Length: 135
Image (tube, rainbow, N blue to C red; front, side, top):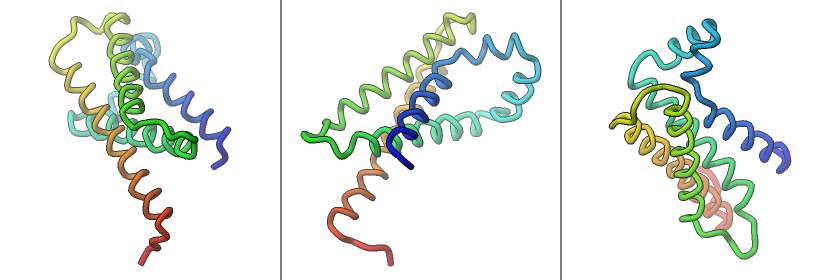
């Protein structure tokens, strides 16, 4: 995937993640049905958030991994933490209700997904740099 397309996908993913789903579900009943179907159980909710942030982590690192000097990984993790917190704040501002442990848990799941996405990309990138081929 070309770099520009990856950047566009990253921006769209971030906008989609920060968007207050609670408010959209209140306005669009069809979207609420789809959202309820996708996230019907706690496990599916966790897995979907984990996958979204993992894909975002992979894409962001694939765009910025070739920079000289390289960007420290802690800045990527802080960026994902900012996105996760912004998403939870938008949900609260949209009227979801008071913050609770589930919001903290969601943020931790988001960060875990992003870190796994970053780690898998770094592992693959390091293998390619060292010339290690698939078996």
